[in-house]
Image 1 (spheres, rainbow, N blue to C red):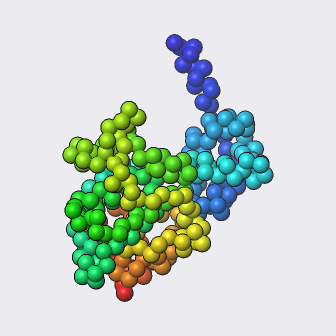
Image 2 (spheres, one colour; image 1 turned 90 degrees about the horizontal axis):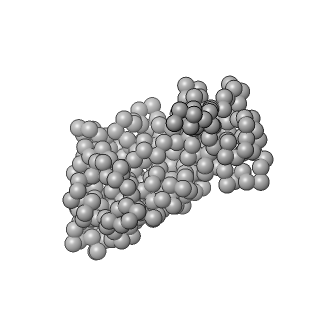
Image 3 (tube, rainbow, N blue to C red; image 1 turned 135 degrees about the horizontal axis):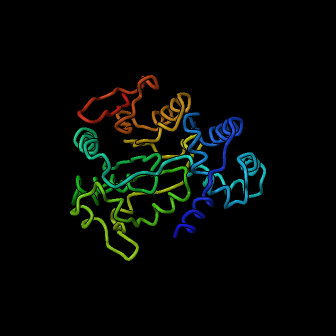
Length: 292
């Protein structure tokens, strides 16, 4: 047991990254994705990339940077690179307090406005959707809110993420127990079916969500997203520097219809980023409204 344990540790020995290598890799990531990695997180490169460098047969970060820039498989490597520098920590019904605020103060308001206008349609953009738990949660919320009225509505939830792997996982719609750590058993039994691989999202929920890979640093791609009544972008802008935050939030503003809402993570704010939205403060959450 002891010899096996010690050998497994040696196989996972971290590849060290120099200051120059860190800056080169950080700048490359920023150029391609808009994700900014602070120098304080330098150790994450060593801990997260070491195994992957071994899988590629590379012995240094200098070799990896050359691989990213010049190898024939460089385009295939980008999605893996982005996965390694972001954290896909999510679950269904995450941050229930914020979701309750959203339902009562944002969703119900917009649904009522649409009814009054005689337009039974709703577009929601889930930006940075990871493996799909957030957009599926929104779809479930709409089922709970509209009930038998839902078939009368034209609803589209556009869910995008930088990672191709996450999008493929979301499209499968099958989840393990961990994804339900903040979800009631009633909701799980109502909207999921137990399968051998885990719990699968039911078709009536899945059909409301349309997944696609998208880089939030690609302005042209963002312009192709249908004009939205609501944009959800929770725990994503924390990866960006000030310039990138302003760029992305500006794209959300342009995408939103007049009177639409932007929802960020509970610890995120538009303070010093944008004055274009009207912040509406509620216990446990802030909703940012586009005036119009």
